[in-house]
Image 1 (cartoon, rainbow, N blue to C red):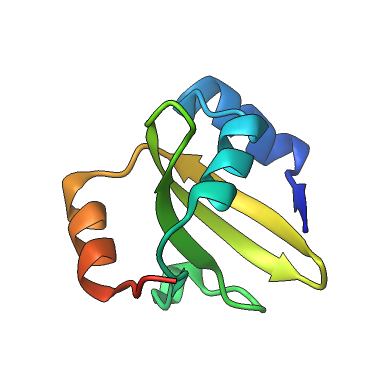
Image 2 (spheres, rainbow, N blue to C red):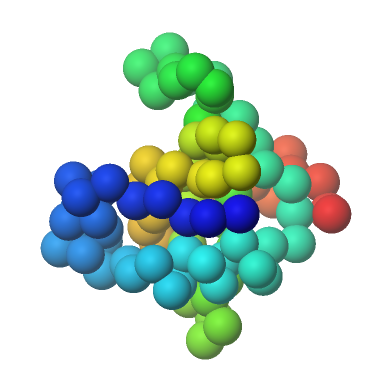
Length: 96
């Protein structure tokens, strides 16, 4: 699996969310629950956007949203989740 980040998304991750690609990779590696699918009408993509919450190696919790394409994942965003997002993920996601 290769992580792909467009220049526009990379700029947003760096300047707005202060998240780097290494942290995203760590979250994928440290993930312990399933991906959820974003079904909100204003966020629909083809294929559908998946998201999860995980921690970096130093314990920083991040929400990662991505689109799977063949063997790659294309990052849409990554940021520190709010309490509502954490609660939704804990309620719906299944352990892997």
